[in-house]
Image 1 (cartoon, rainbow, N blue to C red):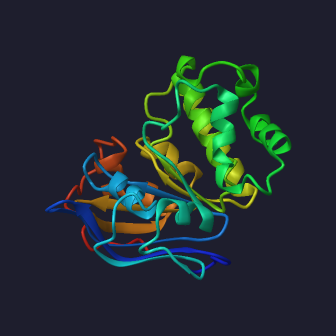
Image 2 (cartoon, one colour):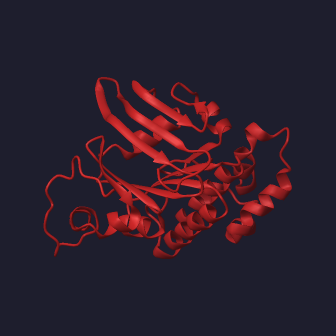
Length: 256
């Protein structure tokens, strides 16, 4: 963890899954203060299972999850959010029958006694001006890109110190995808830590400080994002660089 400081998400030997199926098989991962950490891997590698476990939606079978001095291993979703760890799930999870403003207000639900709601909503929509134009519109009528902006904006109203994003650019036009990833970089610059699960590995690695590669429920490679991005095995396996060779298993390999 050289160069990292402050509060840090620490995941140690994490195992989790569904019923009899164990998906995560001893995952080790860290996110430091004010950094973007990318998690890449093929479909079915266990990335979404990891996010669901970290957010309290799936129980930890063994291992430990901590954020700063707070043990989140057995935490409920509400306790995870209260600790400062907030997730934007795959599929966005907005409430289509509520207006844009009503969706945003729900992000501050657990903070409602102390929040300056109107001011904080204004701060959030300053990042996404399109949302302000649609305050009274039903969320279900928004485009995919607008819904993703809404999902991120709602998460920001929970005042996260760590934001976990699961496939934020999935299904978006190139313009909206660039906008979303630009906001991720801006949030890092404002002090928010980001755990980014992203199908566009090239784009994710360009804005990340560090990266992990997951295969079959295990972290098989990690290091500075630039080193991961330039590794020929990563380029061949995940970045579509067919000119590179060396696509053998990455298990046990580290860039550090």
